Amino acid sequence: KHPETEKIWFSIAEWEAVWKTGVAKFRLALDQDYESLKDKKPYPTEFACGCCLFVSTKVIREVGIFDERYFAFFDEAEWCVRMKKKGFTSYVIPSAFIYHKVGGSTPNLVATYLLTRNRLLWMEENLPVRRKIKSYPVMAKEFIWNLLNVGNFIADSKRYTPKEQSRAFLQGYKDYFLRRFGKWGKETEKVIFKNNNISKNL
View 1 (cartoon, helix red, strand yellow):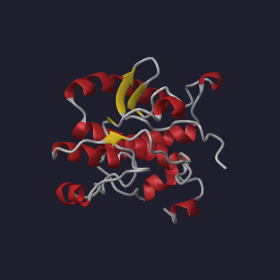
View 2 (cartoon, helix red, strand yellow; view 1 turned 60 degrees about the horizontal axis):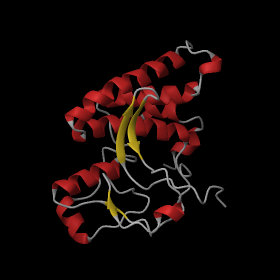
View 3 (cartoon, helix red, strand yellow; view 1 turned 30 degrees about the vertical axis):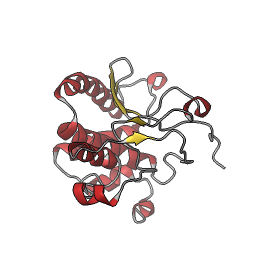
View 4 (cartoon, helix red, strand yellow; view 1 turned 90 degrees about the vertical axis):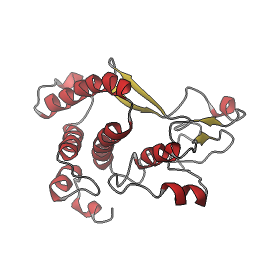
């Protein structure tokens, strides 16, 4: 049994860029417990989480399917942007809930790589200019920290991310700038898998 059955992981999708924490990404949860959230009426969100996403066949016919460049992560965010352009709105339904073991099916380094690469692609194509201006300096701070971490310039007492994770993060940047999307290639596979047997099942 998953230990955090009362924790709300997704209840909203709001973009935020915070210099102090080095965060430029979607915030996925409101600071609420389920008891205070469940009686709220449905409310709009920037995208509907792919863990539990319901659409009509009309939407699929008009919008199409997921963009294969993403492979996984940010694919539903991109899809919902296309829906919005067609006049559809994404909603959170607070009275509905599922149990989701976050990261249960994706190795940590793979998730780090895909989230990094795909975030950049999504921002490039969908984030408004004002948000880009605010977000990119925050991301530069994040990039430099991971670069220094890989180069062993971060003291152990201040290292909150393993070097392997920083390498996966930087590989995400590299593949983005080289326009390598979809499923990763052999070079990336060496960075994001400690156990090569796992990669054969993804």
